[in-house]
Length: 87
Image 1: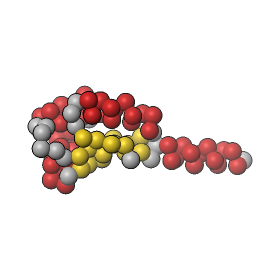
Image 2: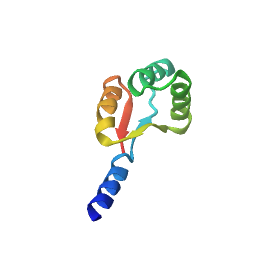
Image 3: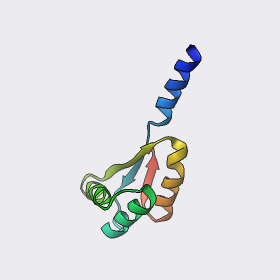
């Protein structure tokens, strides 16, 4: 019984990671939107809303999930020249 409870707690913690995208003075809205669509599987509207939030608020959560799921996506965002981290 304890093991099941422990696993469910670990699973809850495991999916509690976020990719945070930060504003910069380098990338265009179009580049950010296109990258979010390609890397994070956002719809065009979702990607545009995230880009606007990043621009005006300085940052935005663009994806949630397990660290193992988010790591390659965050790497792709960084390789595309965006500022992002997993928290």
